[in-house]
Image (tube, rainbow, N blue to C red; front, side, top):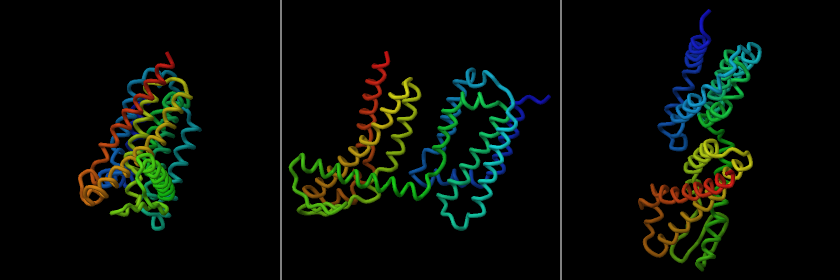
Length: 280
């Protein structure tokens, strides 16, 4: 009998061939769109978790023909539906459907060859692969708008705290010398995605109880909004009182996100330390 590992390897290669078009387009997207630049790292990180936990993940291997077959076929059907609607979908939404289909089908193969218990044991690294899936346009637009509004509210609070008089109309702030709009680019969606991924990894590695994991992940949302609000406030003040170019052509505006990103990661680590300490 052919070893199941060899059979699963052949199955995985077959999935790569079937979904080659979607996977190749996903790789191109990850190198051309900063929002998805993390995608090429996701399978490597997930693979590391599987490898490091392999003795417990594959402790009870058995074939699950029915469940695996159903899930694999469901993924292929979903893929065919995506191809059929390709003309109506933009690239982002098309890749959401096709990459989701690939992961569903491949997971079906994992269940087929190794069983549902293996699937449950490997649940985190499998779910982590979802970060490879592009977010549907409708959802990403809603997230960006939420972050825009949150950023504007945070910036408004910071202006009041430091005693700066501003006239605000929605997402637009009018100061004495400049007018600033909290645009989509100010939402910090790229750093937000990175922060969420880092938070998920931290809670999985260092925390045990579900509620502490939830606290760490939920703390990310206000931290992101505070970070965005500080960035908008600082750039606006520099643009108003020093040089308006700070709002357009400065390095702090174009690539200074890391300056505001790192303190948030440090704060997240402090929260993690407090939660971890409470477990001991």
